[in-house]
Amino acid sequence: PLSPASALPIPRSFLLKSLEQVRKIQAEGTELLEALVSECTTYKLCHPEELALLGHSLGIPHAPLSSCTSQGLQPEGCLSQLHSGLVLYQSLLQALAGISAEVSPALDMLQLDVTNFAITIWQQMEDLGVAPEVKPIQGTMPAFTSAFQRRAGGVLVISNLQNFLELAYRVLRYLTK
Amino acid sequence: KCGQINISAPVVRLGDPVTASCTISQNCSHLDPEPQILWRLGKEQEQPGQRQQRLPDGTWKSTITLPYLNHTHTFLSCCVQWGNHPQILDQAELQAGYPPAVPSNLSCFMNLTTNSLTCQWEPGPNTYLPTTFILKSFKSRGNCQTQEDSVFDCVPEKRHSYCSIPRKQLLLYQNMVIWVRAENALGVRESPQLCLDPVDVVKLEPPTLWALEPSPQAAPPQPHCLCFGWEPWKPSIYMDQECELRHRPQQEGASWAQVAPLPSSIHQYELCGLLPATVYALQMRCIRSPLPGYWSSWSPSLELRTTE
View 1 (cartoon, rainbow over the protein chains, first blue to last red):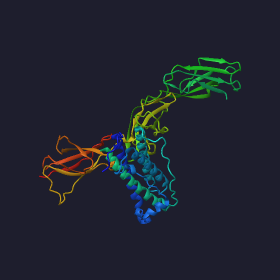
View 2: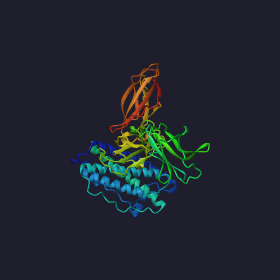
View 3: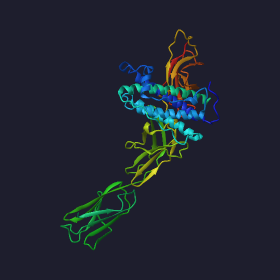
View 4: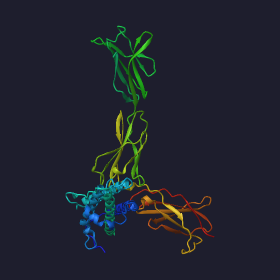
């Protein structure tokens, strides 16, 4: 079980909206992943586990959520990591632009929703007075230089995003209780 | 150019006066030394101006004031009598109408299929003038006192009193400021501003109901009960919702009985306390809950019959 939250007065409406945004993005991510993986027969991109090495070589970063785990929940740090993670995935999804004509609309929608969720979190941090002075600056993004790298990168990025959202959902649900 | 019209304003309020002058240059050949300048409004009979004078430079100038213009669109011609026929030397287009009214009853709903926010409004009475309406919006937050982004203009199709703001211009889960601007040659009016989160005005479609096939594992249906399956509208599946069920027997004058709330997470339901051997119509509707939203309309009826 997650340890008790500190005294950060997080509004319930914010938590309910955030949970809904997570579910919306997860649903879109699942559909997009299915579309990418459904090209399996053509491109043999079925299992993200087969792309781990490629992920390292491309330098696809992961978003840490250490302040959101059960060992030591720090809501303020957790909100900040959620925001930074969403900004990271927003940039990664942008780097995947042009992945394929079929999934581009879904990719655009996913990126818009991730962007909006990041704004929801940031504005709540501002309202709580815990937002850092300067927004986190995005590090360099991997360059997907071939159609294969964009497809494989797409599978990896979206799989990572789903895992990130799963953790986010758990902590938001905990904070709602 | 022989004749030149100057008018006080090409567009006036319906019923307001219009003043015009027509100047005939002296090098307009073939004219009488003292030409009589006439005015023709639309198809009406020509009439002289209230005043005609010869200017120091030899040009002739006639001035006319139409006390009230009650044509919404007409032409004012400057003519001179020449031979048997009046000759038109210049013509001015005149329009009359009203400034736009303040657009009213602005309301919006979010369409989850197109992911756009559609807003509609009442344009107000006919202005008789070309009038443009623009739906304007910007991203904000909290109680909409700050502007977080540039204003987006949604230009509706001709004569439409609604416009759809595309997803890219929307900030979901934060408040946006939305209003309508009406403009024509006689003025500009703006509607009161709405402050809303697009997701809070989602218009849900009704859920889908279906009969459950009797299965060997399941207990046989009770005589006074009906079982059915249902699921919320698919594009809204990620939203927590509250749903209502209503039912009535297919009998003359029967009224609806309502069952609420059905949590949106359980997708099978057994409805009991019914008349045996009777056909019932079942309908459901849902609303986003506990977060704000609009009720969907009632679903089409699912007709099921209770056993003997």
